[in-house]
Image (cartoon, rainbow, N blue to C red; front, side, top):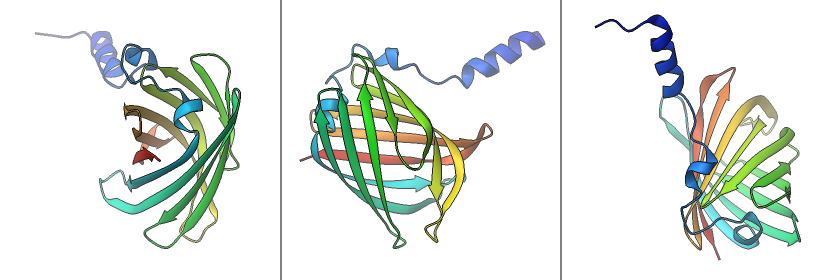
Length: 175
């Protein structure tokens, strides 16, 4: 059986397509960043290189404060190799499904969609080097899925010029 070249290309492209946040619209518990990322949270995670090596691991202490639809989320990372990093997100919920965010190591504005138990954010992120300096800018596709009212799983796929640059997997626990 022969598959036309255009058909093969379509199959390859759809095989690489990302899920859509709307795919999670009927899932619960519902994720509202204003509620889940309000107050204190703790997280653990690891970075996986493109080859699959898990290094470094890290912990994160988070503190979210909201005033209506505007919030700040402070993150304090401690890496297994001794590095420490702080990030402060400035977040804005524009409606029931749209979130934007900025941070010092994010180029431009992160844009997100919230549906059901999922949040999908896309942004460009400066990666911190082992010496503490700002490294390359990578594209980030960030998914957070609530698994309970107090627990969320986060998967961030990183890429450069469309090529895999690794991923981070993080588990959040709300205090």
